[in-house]
Length: 95
Image 1 (cartoon, one colour):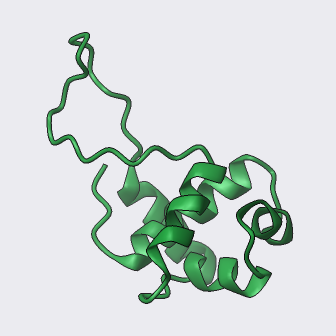
Image 2 (cartoon, one colour; image 1 turned 120 degrees about the vertical axis):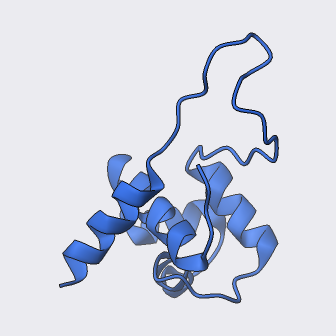
Image 3 (cartoon, one colour; image 1 turned 90 degrees about the vertical axis):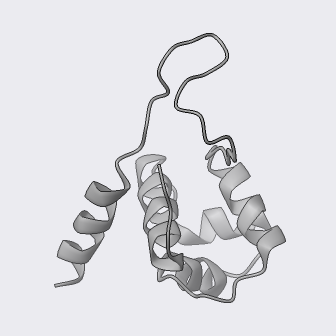
């Protein structure tokens, strides 16, 4: 999965939060931020503090992997998140 923009990252965070049936306030409490911060990151705020973004990813169980190989060490294909589908869905819900 490639996340290319802050909006892409926000869409992934929002999608995972909703799949986990968490509201923004609950996620904010888990991260230690305000609900407004969660709203901003979900809308692709480009200047979010990296440490807080990493805490959000951890709280949602979203791994951050800098390995560019397509296979795991055991040789099996990684399960990928379809970022394009998530972004398309987020754009549809806004209109």
